[in-house]
Amino acid sequence: MPNALPRPHRPPASLHPPGDAPRAVIARTALTMVPGAAPLDDAAVILAGRRVLDIGPRRLVLRGFCGPTTDLGAQAVLVPGLLNAHSHLELSHLGAHSPSGAGFCAWVAWLMGQNLHALSPAALNAAVAETAGCGVAAVIDIGSRAGPAVAAALGRAGLQGLVCHEFLGWRSLAATGVPPALDAAVGDGLAATVSGHALYSTSPDNLRQGQALCRARGTPFSLHLAEHPGEVELFASGTGEFAALLRGRLLPKGWRAPGRTPTAEALAQGLLGPDTLAVHAVHLSATDVALLANSGATVCLCPRSNARIGVGVADVAALVAAGVPLALGTDSLASNDDLDLWNEVRALLAVHPGLPGSVVLDALTTTPARLLGRAHDLGRLVPGAVGGVAVIPPDLAEALDLGSPGRG
Ligand SMILES: [Zn+2]
Image 1 (cartoon, rainbow, N blue to C red):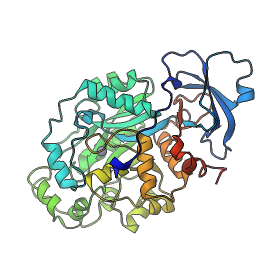
Image 2 (image 1 turned 60 degrees about the vertical axis):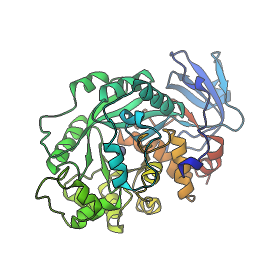
Image 3 (image 1 turned 30 degrees about the vertical axis):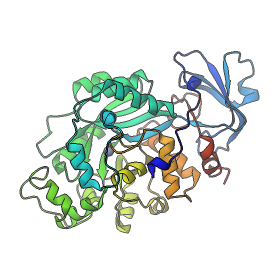
Image 4 (image 1 turned 45 degrees about the horizontal axis):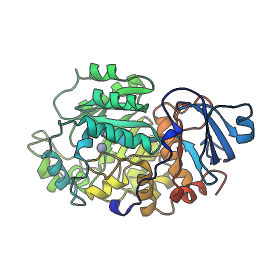
């Protein structure tokens, strides 16, 4: 499926040029993502860098404005700068070589054969440029090897969000927090924290301590959860190909299956709450969906990564019906063709064509912004916001615009 997607759409690179000199952008419509606000027709936004100085009807906003103006044309629909809620930028040098659709065990075997430490500055910078180029303003990035380099590259590109140092393993990480070099590399709307890899790879103590550290820092806690069928089988019975792969490697001697689903196990470990970002969540029972909804956790959908690895398709309709907040992430170039978040939307809508545009737009903007504690200045087009703007690609305008609040 990823190969059948249209080529990424590129809005004018001049939307967020270097420098803080005020400039205006004009579009047919702006979707501010302010709850209850109608679409702004014949809209103008005045930006200083990515900071929104003013937004409203063109005739009002541009009165007396004499700076440079970019007219995006009679069809353009503006939205707030997007948030990519799950990436691993340190793996960008692995792009385009991963096996396709072979299943999680085959993908892990391939990944373990790669040199994961061979960070390529050129590949990292290209990945960050691609992220920014599609209209992303902020990311939640996960890594364990090159956090400071990733943070520096994001900062140079003017991107914000969160760089997470991933906890993985059973060896106690009690003394390990955010590496000082990572803390030193963030700033200007980019924060540092930790994350947990997964229930099968990381001890309950380490996950609990990681979550406590996130809470102390006021950041969300990311965890890969219920990604593939082998994970479900492992926690249900301790059997299967994935269990065999892990025993003697990641799983400690004497580990016993808890006899429940990964989601129920995450709840039992106290890991699900409004500050949890459950990534993938492909294999959920009806009870799991209700548990997630009751916990207030956000689910990050990664449709192209799931398709590339061959783990299945998330039941997005059930998540939406249950009221689970959704975000969208590209995952890494080790399991995706590119980091264009609009291509993630295309893949999502290809599999879930009835998904309301408002659900998709919230997943791209307001929901991850709220999770980051940045609802005031990311994910909305209001004066004082700092995420700049994105342009809905023409082929997606109807699907997203018509489903937006006030239009459908
Ligand atoms: Zn991931």
